[in-house]
Length: 233
Image 1 (tube, helix red, strand yellow):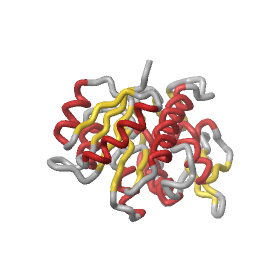
Image 2 (image 1 turned 90 degrees about the vertical axis):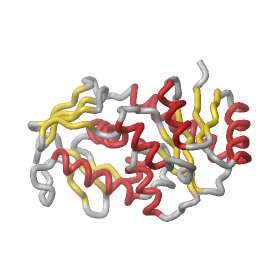
Image 3 (image 1 turned 120 degrees about the horizontal axis):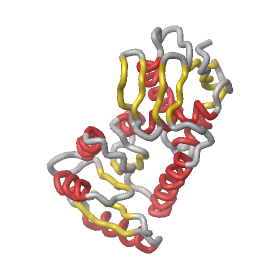
Image 4 (image 1 turned 90 degrees about the horizontal axis):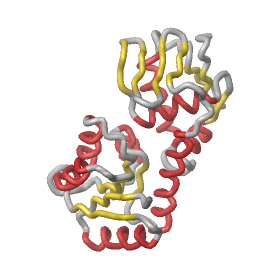
């Protein structure tokens, strides 16, 4: 079955270029020109990916993505934006985006990013972790429901937070570099930067570490990366 992609872009020539190239690659596409119609289309269901401009009439792309995540939508989101600062990229990813491309962009690279997002979904669904619910210490993560039990009780993690936890669990008691995490969770090591990984690790420590200044589970290995120790030592 063809993957179905929602393109949310208010500049007609950009939307048309993306649409034509994706359809040439065998994808089905639908185009929305503003944030409100994007949410209407998404709520109808059936989309495997959203390509989402940030600067939109009505609701901007960041708010559209946050709304989708608040409503428990797990569809991958690839942001497009003229904002090219690292802080802008991090904001988009922390809002629930799976990828972030700056304008102007190369259409071939966009196609590659789309294919990479779908490959990450295959990796996530065929993990070497036997149990969907991974327990460590007094805590657990459910890789199917995105639910977790942490310091403050049960909570819901973002897709990327769960993917990072799954990667760390697959490599428990091993030192993993930031580039290894980027490659596994985002599928490449150009964007986002290693700083993005650090931001997500901070968020995960808030969930699972009783004392964030002295982590028991997610350790920083200076000059190398991180080490996840399920035993809590």
